[in-house]
Length: 314
Image 1 (cartoon, rainbow, N blue to C red):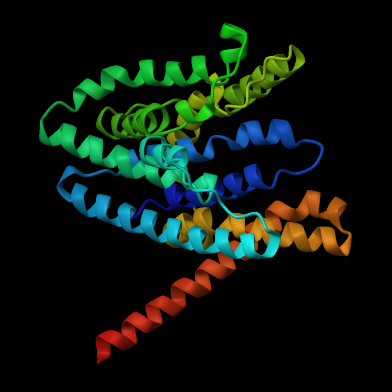
Image 2: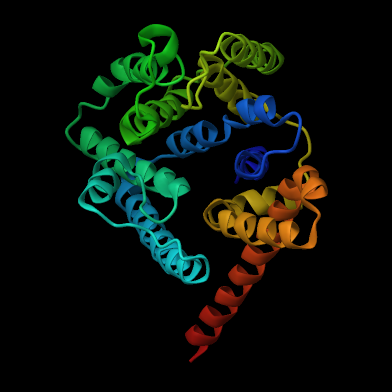
């Protein structure tokens, strides 16, 4: 039986990720800081439900999604380039970043799919070699590396490092995926109190870093880690009723909402600027893009399902 609260959480995290790419006016910076839990929560959910017996099946599923998404954005990049004159530049450097750091040359947000794919392959091999526990010991080190060379790099070193060096499968994918596995195996939890506490500490972290000119571009705060665990813990323990459509969106559509929404951000932001409603768009854009993405992905999924049914009947 599916856990509807987890599916609902996936819907919420999908919306939070849309908000990152379409931040509301005035409260954008602090709201985005809280929205940053979206990707860690998705990674932990993947880890929580990871099963060694179906490991290769899960890897194939993500690999197909990874290829499909990059092909779509390859086509979109060249279409957008034909319209705007801004074509993607594919160099040896971009290929290296693509292979080793999961940075897609066609759209930055696709790093997440590469990170999930690499992480699942690594975890699968470690379990096969019966040394999976070795990665558990490295979780604090990997997370700390991200924090030290990411968000707190200006404070500690007086400079920023390329965030791609830490926003990848190794320093984000593996630790959060592994935390999800531990939450399943060891029933690791943070109580409901963690949500208000770490929401406040996230806001405080950002305030102090910004006020002192130390807010590096890398987007993961220390509190992001604990807020993410708190939110997933709450969803896992939640026993109340869940709206069915909220759960269905998370179950069936969340992956493709993540993949496709930047195209709608680009298109409708352009339209809003052309018709002179940028100010209104700044407040409602995230909600509009999320709804359009849900509708588009739902219609697409239904069309594909219908085609498959007709094909099978032949």
